[in-house]
Image 1 (cartoon, rainbow over the protein chains, first blue to last red):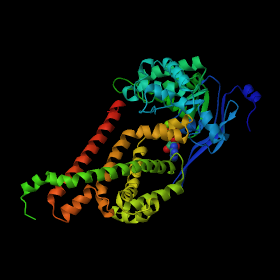
Image 2 (cartoon, each protein chain N blue to C red):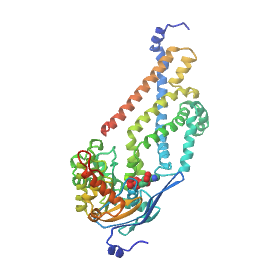
Image 3 (tube, chains in turn blue, cyan):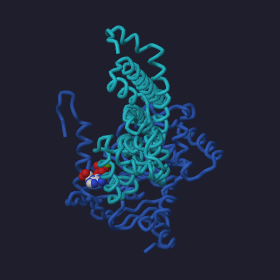
Image 4 (cartoon, rainbow over the protein chains, first blue to last red):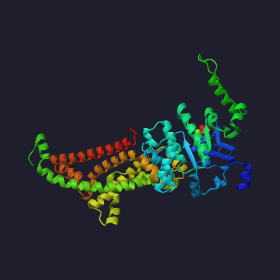
Length: 271
Length: 234
Ligand SMILES: Nc1ncnc2c1ncn2[C@@H]1O[C@H](COP(=O)(O)OP(=O)(O)O)[C@@H](O)[C@H]1O
Ligand SMILES: [Mg+2]
């Protein structure tokens, strides 16, 4: 059942995921990756989901724009029940959700400006409008001088900025980030995270950010959840999860984090 | 026929008498190669895109159709060109009214080359990272967008290289055109060089074919490199 806008306003949540399940089947074997995920995310939040490799983070984020079809459960964004959209409604709706990837996934055949205008072309924007919009967005991500470069000429950090620009082209309400900084060095990671912070404030964009790096969460997220073996085992404001981790995964994450910090020069300390 | 030394044979291969026979056949070969290549390019691309798209992991999964199409392609590819030429005789008669001559030959050659190029197109497109297609999908791209704006442009350098292979195959397959009375360099090489021991004509015809293949291969390699350079991928 679709929630009415009254109920939604009362709950104060922009994105609501309830009982989300996903099982992969291949060669007669089935593998339950999401085992009933519940999440509520407020508008304008930067929400971090942390978990170890294989926990189901990517599958979760891919269900939100239905790159993966959930088996059951509900995903509601605003008033829209995502899981019930038809094919053509889905294409429209996807234009309002940006996503960025670890591998950037830029098109090598297109220049920076042409990569950014790609989603506009698909949405059927007029060329004149596109050009203005592309210039605007490239300015925002500080890449105006690289408009006519090809991705092959860019560094990793610049590529991810193009990825972000492309994701923002259609004025989305939500930005999904799947390990967007995991292929970048620490300094570049920082600058990309600063950019995400910046657009979160400027554009009032809701960001869902998936990562296995605790520092990323600590640096920009307001609220977070811990995904363990296909289930949310813990969630809340970042500070409270960090101060008193309850789940095994959260505790282990903190321990590893602290372990690296205390690691001595002679190989003492440790995790 | 007087016996010629090796040197005399080579000299004769470049004589006006020899080229009077070979030159018109260059035109015949080019004519057949051109039109076969056009048909192969168009239908091969179509076939390759269909094979990729309708695969179970494709953008428009249709496993049943894909299996049947793949089966037909494999079937055609397993047959020697000579057999295909014989099998396409009725098809030519149906389409153009005759089953001999250059036009009939073009149909037969296209039927031989389309399945091969289709498979090459398929493999080129499969090299495009899945993530790029998914990224397009996540922005609301429809299948036609993905084919026209992602698959083909991203696979372009590889497509050009594989197209070059296909054109070379077309050139060498035209050697069978003689079977349909369509002439061409291969036919001359067989009729004069083999049947009538005119080694000079054989040499001349073969040389021209070698030069043609060289030109095509170099042009293809160059073009593919040019695209890669423009994109700063090499
Ligand atoms: N398309 C798929 N088919 C089968 N198994 C999959 C597929 N996608 C992911 N998986 C499996 O689901 C599990 C979770 O994957 P993923 O969501 O990518 O985890 P994470 O992003 O947290 O590392 C992994 O064990 C992975 O092998
Ligand atoms: Mg992942």
